[in-house]
Image (cartoon, rainbow, N blue to C red; front, side, top):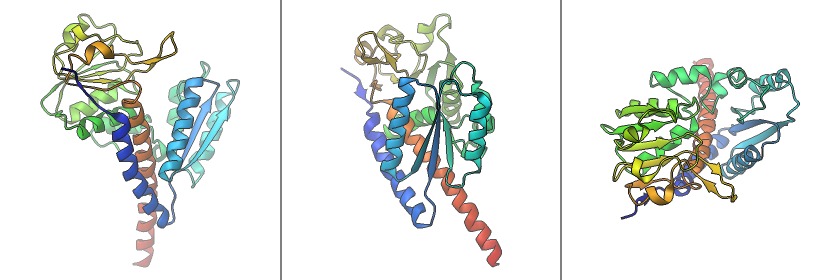
Length: 294
């Protein structure tokens, strides 16, 4: 019996409808959520992601700007621009599109974003808040995975979750979020000895390694929930995940496709974080008004 396909497009669409109502409510109160995306260089995949994000913003009622820099741009030039965006009251969220050219230091640029505008959730302060279970802006991709599990009725508490991948963007925050929901969590990498032994014991398996079709059916527990975060361009031009979808779907209980799985959820949670940032600005403004009127 084939696995249930978790439709990320459908879940993301429902969530975006919720976010649109919130955005419209804020606009009626005089504040339109605003997102600025900074992109450096001419990476085709990044350009596609940025266009998708801009379109999603328009459809949700979020004001958006795209700030493009050539690959030859200096780090200081981009940092100065981020500083200007930090000071711009129309912008509530700032996102630096990764990857950056080699002469840029990712962490430096991300740490330069104002914490209250770090809607990607990568700033050191936001990661620290995630560790303590108090994140305001959870990183979008793992946050999207958690929403997928929730909306699909998949129990996390008490389950053995295995995360394959240790990146700061997905693997590490994913493990923390699963742990926060009382899962027993194992973190593996592509170099883990007896990787199949670990993945084969997972009730929930999340894979984010960037290695196409790395996880095969013999590495998966029967009826497990398999979340494929990877997206890879194959030699034939087609997209594939880090999981061998065709074989694993015959063994798993639930599985996400690529494309149409985690990707749409990442954008949906970015919209949520941007609206949340605008909401916090609005709440602060109302608080100041109430204080003055007392």
